Amino acid sequence: MTNHSAITSVSAIASAVSALEQGEVIAYPTESVWGLGCDPWNEAAVQALLKLKDRPVSKGLILVAADEAQVNPFLEKLTGEQRKVVIESWLDPTSRATTWLVPLTDDVPIWISGAHDRVAVRVTRHVQTRDLCRAFGRPIVSTSANPSGEPSALDSAMVEQYFNQLVFILDGQTDGATQPSLIRDAITGEVLRA
Image (cartoon, rainbow, N blue to C red; front, side, top):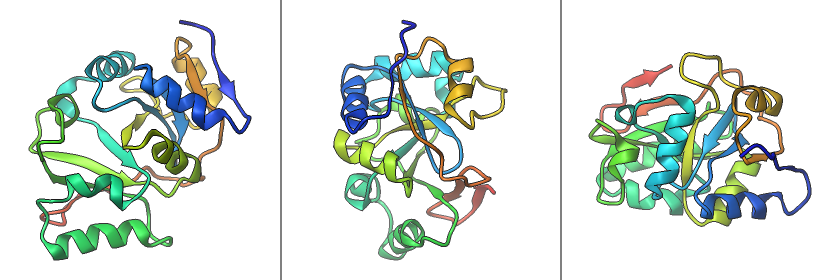
């Protein structure tokens, strides 16, 4: 699969959704770096993504969503206060993008959680990625677009350099954040990636 499809028209999101629905791995911009994504509930798609990155399934993957409604199923084991802290972090436009580790629910496949008893979730502030998740109707996988051990892709040219076999690259720009999302444990508050 070597024919790239970097689309800049208004149909870009619809084309990306179509690729996700067909079980393909796509590349798309996020707050700070480019990400690779796929349908989290399609095991073959997730395995293809992991193979592209040379990443073991045991490490687990982040889910990125459009809004609170899309992550509600993953927050059900949090207390009211924990949930409030998580949601407020996503709503605060002045804070750094934050990915939260929350207790596993029955909605999370083992190929997403890996060897962990938590799943990583984030409501994105990146407009294009939010529109993508909204159009897809549920969260998507979000992992940096780079082979394991290599620097994260900062633009679509780097994505193509790393993964010339990708079928779909959603044309766009990152939000220019200089650091990837903060990762915190929603139960303990501990920061796992500063």
